[in-house]
Image 1: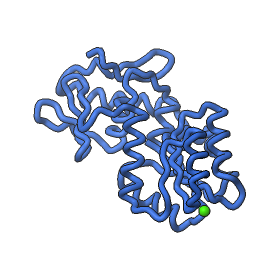
Image 2 (image 1 turned 45 degrees about the horizontal axis):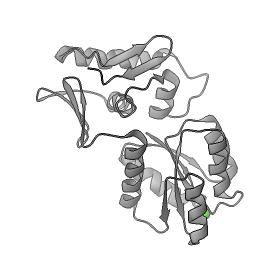
Image 3 (image 1 turned 30 degrees about the vertical axis):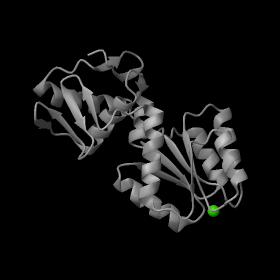
Image 4 (image 1 turned 135 degrees about the horizontal axis):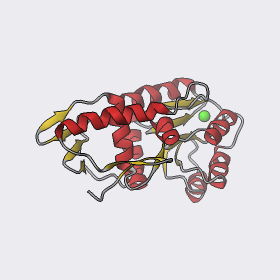
Length: 226
Ligand code: CA
């Protein structure tokens, strides 16, 4: 899952990014509203952590813009602005949560995970995929008491498909949510295919995995029909 951190206090933004990276999030930063607006318009984010007090922008306008463009992104407002009014306005505009500054980083993580559970309806604590189980604590994929060895990115890819189960995700979406912003000249459309092929190879050593479907011409989907 990827997060855009919109915060003009660079040291706080960096501190949040370091913490969330350790929790396996992909982090991008914007230190002002204009930069954030541009990034939200061109990149696919799962979450935006939004400081309302930006030097050049009313943070609430970022939510308005994103909603107008139907961006599928969840906003969590972080702000020192105590006004109940702003908080209500933010939630009215469709922000998913509100966290007053100062806050403890583990609390921020807990809030993001709560929003993620609503957004993706993540089954907890573990995700069953056919004969396999993704154990979230320790990030392991198990089959019959045996761990299927995977790289971090392979696990992230499978996890992202699993929380979006029954939904077809394009290679572009998978790339952006797991590897981050795509640079056109860097992107190779085979990239995701190669990773999926490697994952399938590892799964098939243990058991068939028909639930990991290729949707011709579109992308990939994890189906719960199996
Ligand atoms: Ca600020």
